[in-house]
Image 1: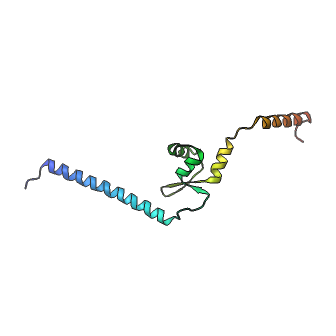
Image 2 (image 1 turned 90 degrees about the vertical axis):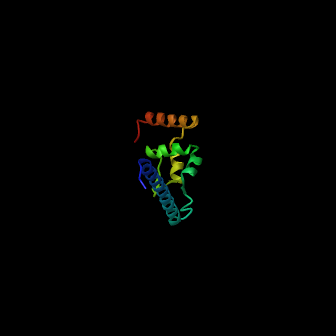
Length: 120
């Protein structure tokens, strides 16, 4: 039997496809082992990406982008990304705008402080 270039190419392609399948199977096994080693719900305060996405009303891709830019506090365990419900709540509250009443109160307080010669 004579070996042709076409036979070699087919063989190489088959080996590549098998190695790709093996890689994806190994990744899946790794993910399953990580899931088994961690409790299902570590803490009611910890959220996964989908839960954080729902709480912040942002897409999952936006969540990943904000984590990459270090705009959102997060934890990483293996390939899993977690968020603290408390820290996400604080993140949302940091962007809170003052009401007109609060702005007025702040202005009155600053004016009163200025009239009394500044902070004592």
